[in-house]
Length: 444
Image 1 (cartoon, rainbow, N blue to C red):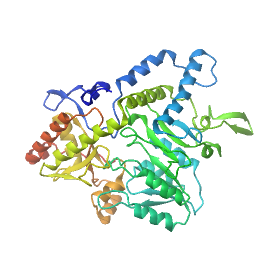
Image 2 (cartoon, helix red, strand yellow; image 1 turned 60 degrees about the vertical axis):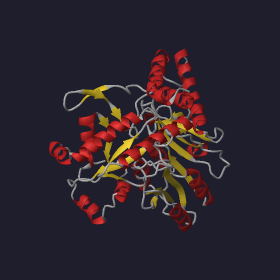
Image 3 (cartoon, helix red, strand yellow; image 1 turned 180 degrees about the vertical axis):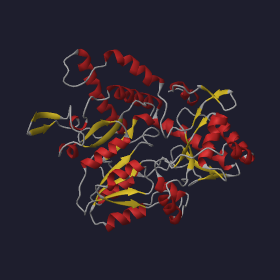
């Protein structure tokens, strides 16, 4: 493994020069890794190297098709090894991203029975909330004052529903605050009440080691979803892992090429999973990218990556805490978090702050609610009547925050640049507000 300071060598475009509003050029700083990450150099190379051998997989007799098929199926084993899934009982299904994975699972587990309940939480991304609403009764595990999931409320709801809870769907790490949920402790609680657990791993898998645990462990994870575009392989592939038995029943949500074994005009025999769940021509290039991403992350060491990013989180929090006028959301501690920092500058709209950082410093952040509007509303303590006002008036400005999210290639020197510009913005707030008063904050 190379030294920490050379992580940047692994990432495409880490030192790209971009223009500022004054016409000068500067080195781009990307603190928006929670949305998507740039590709690894090794990922680009793997795609280029594989390109001459690319062919449509399954059923083709040509050498390239056979080679591509072998690689595609080998990728399922690599995914299982990367997250320590039980290959005997669980299968890997390739999808476009985490959102599609959760939607697919929601249709697979779909039941209109009034007694069936899905527990989501108040800190979830919309993708781990909305797909369940039209198929189950959905209830939400509460959060504490700092935005962390309440295990006491989870236990209370599991007890209250008396076995009616079929699934508990929680994030591994929040995309707003970075809080890591104690997923194995949650799994033990969930299984004790006869339910299953889904972990949205989009914000956790790229940043720390993950262990689904054996199927006979009370702490095992039943379903796991994540996206390659957040783990340095942004080429349109995602993963859904779950018990094979779940996908053997009923018909797939997407139907067509590759999903069937036998068809007549009045009969369908579906192919076995996972093929049944992967309609159409598979994204082999995306799978190649994911495979190389997992190889590179494993080579660098997930524990080492976790320690490095946690050190960046600690350093960033300390820097921002010293700037008067910076309002940090949630806890100021760096323990049990991935490297995400949500904040606002007092008196400046979140969208305006993000624009200033980009135009004046070449610093990419994200602002808004990050597809987690109920969570951000709670964190900002938005009164119910104000939320209702926004429902009644679609043109009303939305609340939100600015989000910094680090990747393994970010540095303390980049954080120093951010902190210096934030300090300057606070000291010259009026001038910046006048200059950027027409900037509208994003809604989502």
